[in-house]
Each structure stands twice: as C-alpha cells, then as structure tokens.
Amino acid sequence: MPAPSDRIDKPEPRWQVILALLAVGGIHLALPRWFIVGPIWLLPGVIIVLLVPTIMTHRTGRKSLNHALGILINAIITIALIGSVVLLVTTLPSHKETPSRLLRSGGLLWLTNVIVFALWYWRLDGGGPSVRHDQNKFGSTSFLFPQMQVPRDERAQFECARWRPHFVDYLFVAFTQSSTFGPTDAPLLARWAKVLAMCQVFISLSIVVLLISRAVGIL
Image (cartoon, rainbow, N blue to C red; front, side, top):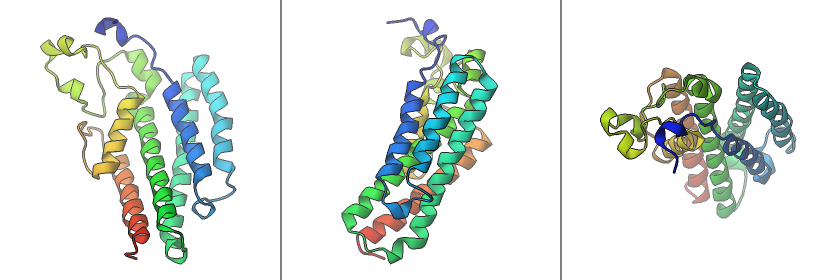
C-alpha cells in the first residue's frame, strides 16, 4: 500500500465523474416522456458532445477551458433537472400513473438530484479538481470532512496525513443531504456550498413530498 505522503500527489481519477455524467443521461432516457423538457435525446446528446472537448482539454492541460466546460455541463444538467421537477409540480395531479411507475420515476429524479449536486461540489470546491491538485493542499476549503477533524499528530495513523477529497466524497455528501434533508458528517464552510445545499434539499423535498404522496393516494 502506498504511503499517505505519496497518495496526494497522484492526479484524481476522472472516470468517476464521466460515469456520473453518463448516468445522468441514462436516467434522463429512462424517465417518462412527460417528465422531460424538449426532445428526449437532447440532454444525453449534449452531455456526450461536451464530454469530448472536456476530456481533451483535461488531457492537454488547458485547465481554464476544461473548468469552463465542466461548469457548462453542470449548468445544462441542472436546468434539465429543474425543468423535470417543474413539470412534476405542475402536471402531476392531472396524470393517472400507477403508484409503482410514479415511485420509480421519483427515485430516478431523486438520484439525478444527488449526482447533479455532487458534480457541483466536486467542480467548485477549492477552485476545482485541477486547482486542488496543483496546490497540493490537505483537505478541503469548503467542506469540513471527518479526515480534517483528526488531530494533526494522529493523521498518519489513520492514513489521512496528506488526504484530500475525491468525487466519491462529494457524492456521499450529496447523497446524505438528499436523504436526511439536513447537514451531513461534512459540515459546509463556504457560503456557495450552503446555497447549493439549500437548493438540493428543496428539490429533494419537492420530489419526495409531491411524488410519493401522489403515489400512495394522499393527493
């Protein structure tokens, strides 16, 4: 096993982020047509088209352009998510879907919400993954992860002496926030993270309250 001091110098793997973006496109295709704004193929197509230059700019070291493309992809999938939630709120009472189909659709939207905001946290924390790698600093500037709360003289014992978060850490934060509708084990430090967390929890609550209550016949 590599020493903790060596682990932080390795570039963060990007395949997890690529997989998350492709998952958003796949979930979009699995949603009922009335949950989707525009042609059903539009969002997956845009994701794939923008992923190509995003990957190329990362591999060629064009960090500013890579960061801008990442922000653009995140903005597009966020708009698509909000559009689906708006359609849920405005058209749900008039649709006679079966409870199982509604629950399945709600689960897919809820999962999309988790992935979308995990991508935002990963992209914005500390200026982005490229900046975090270049600065080679311990921990995070926007989240107080458990590893950062270990006393400095005990960090080597827990293999977190030179630790910094990867995408899975942000995914866990987003998942727990959508599950508990509140703070996670990684408190938020930055104001932008708090604003995004409020948006994420609001969307999650909208999906859970409206869709599940409709599915069980309360509305």
